[in-house]
Image (cartoon, rainbow, N blue to C red; front, side, top):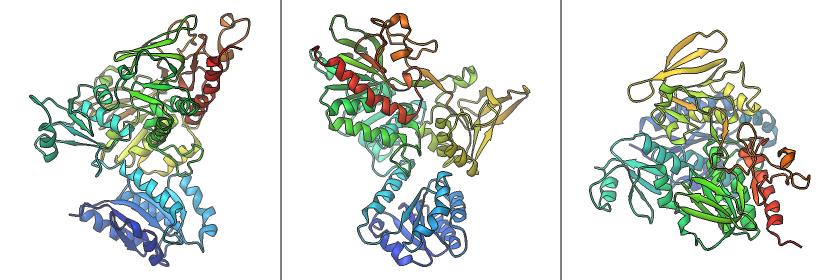
Length: 553
């Protein structure tokens, strides 16, 4: 049985050039060449029959027996997780591009590239390795493992730990206790084993009772900060706004600490593919965008602490530092940026809520998506995050149904995602519908759906429900001195009520009603709830922090 993933090249006119372009991948992939779509389907059948899988299909822009996009459609049905690349010969690249590039926006394939013209065409290989890296993040059992999880069962906690590690860019695998890996970890454990056990590189093996235990074990706690030292700026929340604030603050010499309750990246970190983020023409997953930003901030000296829930913010008076309180310790800062983002709104259907973690998930749940192979699943929500989740789930699930209360998706979802959903045969959209019931024996097995126009109800079988229902702010810990709107979002700038202005002047654009405390991103009232706008606000808040920290003239 072959365990080496395959790359299938499809070319009738230039097979030697294609093979030479992929020569560097032969050592780690099973590179095979087909001369037509029909032959590619046969090669794929052989790979699957041998117990292998296909990581990538790379085809010329013209095939002898089929339109290349139609061929990709057939191949996608065989291997939904494989990345699909058109590598056009330089004689046809300009000619074929206009007719093919529109298909990329609909998700018909992943990249339109120029076939390599030499042995070191690094622009080409940068695109290929990026796509193979994205493919690797969808593999249930990756080759390179940073964290070992030992558990006799794959329960909700084990799944949540893997999801956290996935979002942090740390590949993991789950092994049973009687496996080689299980015995290796148990040999390092002193006492009666309790599961799950988590073993990460250069860290002590722990019995995890929560995701927070794993985060603290790997990334530390605020008590490791010298409590006599006051940092220049503390950022609460590690989503796009907080990450941008951290990068710009640390790069300008401010001592910067970031406290994140869950995984770095926030809600955006769960997006399987963001295709409209500036500068990434092939798209980028939320996890990779977050990890690149985190590494960038670390390079400038910022310090990150995950698994840290801020329970209280005590504003400083008369020049005293602000104090952020967590279970693990306190952080004192001259300035604070609130970028704690939002949480998905609860469904509030009690039988369904009882199954959260057992077939019911809030957010995209990257790890849970891999568990849906061959199953029928439902996604509730009409925003971009719901659309991205549906597209990602369609790589694994037999069918994905998007449920929305509205009559269509056009009001709430980007056009490029709607086009991608329409093209994908595994995804259907069920409008004017809502979930009113659900149940199962220990895990989700069925849902009760209601037509909001007629009140008619239907019971449908399902294996997974993914809830992406809109935003509620993370603001319970914010003191009353900071003004908020009727929905709980933080007010800044001219949105602050006039009776809270000082000397009849509003606060600065991203400043709150407490001097030295700022807000950026989704938690701020009036924000656009988009990754790019949150990043922009995070960068824009740093000059305001600088101005506040500057000594008075």
